[in-house]
Length: 393
Image 1 (spheres, one colour):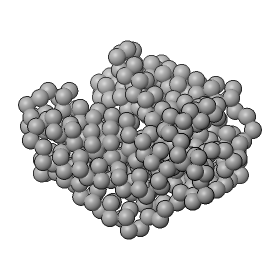
Image 2 (cartoon, rainbow, N blue to C red; image 1 turned 90 degrees about the vertical axis):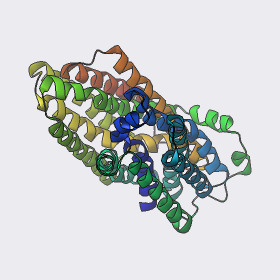
Image 3 (cartoon, one colour; image 1 turned 120 degrees about the horizontal axis):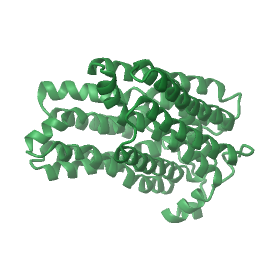
Image 4 (cartoon, rainbow, N blue to C red; image 1 turned 30 degrees about the vertical axis):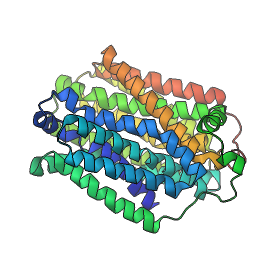
């Protein structure tokens, strides 16, 4: 498990650690801040565009070769960023970094599916992985800020290059292949499109993926719109806002921890529906509190903490429900799962930003309510008997 945590943490650090350096990069290359912010966009584009390829490679040739290839591409991109003397080279390096790290979550979930033969165990493993990784999105910008302040904008990328070298050494020396040797040859040789078609044709996969993606989108909508509400309308100091953001992670840790403890006793679908209900109700609570106390930080952060409790149950259960039935195509199923949710989050995030209608706590609560309720209705209408995870594929 610790190897998988390290791998996915590297992927998340790769996205979040450079965020404080955007201003420094923009100044260094004499571009506007929007162009400097493209270092995040380029990385995300690389991740999203490569996941399906790694899913197929991991199913066809094994989990270890897929990550070895991904880490090699990540290291090449890191060197290009560190040595790049133009903005174009830096963006190209970031695209390669993301293209390399497309292997991380895809292969990690597939490895968990390989090693967890019973459905409840797979949910437990996903919940534990989610708990361990909840700190990386916050620790990344903090560490990146210190490195940028002390040593300049390239320091964070040098640190990532060193992390990549260490991760590659650990992976090559410590990871043991988990892909089943008795996977049918016909399945292995199927094209990416054939494998994807077999997966998205499953209603269980589709509804679990979209339901989880809607909740994930709610989290992103909050992160995108809460700064101007908290710092502008409510008037919180930036350091207080940062601390309150960290507290909502406690809710996520609590939800994931409870899920890991109860998933062996209760059906995965039941836990998932409870988590979806919690997210929808948290949105209702935020809307109501925001209408009553429009300039209250409690109205913004308390319901969001409850939303993240529900998300801590939704994320691992959605992954288990979507990927679990595809034992022989776990890599491709994980890739389609991650790619679909990534596209959903980007589209909903862009829509919420361009529409410019989420300007108050109550409006943000309404958005979370719509996303949570839609996810609940979608999964509730399609939920049926639990399918045994090792019989399809």
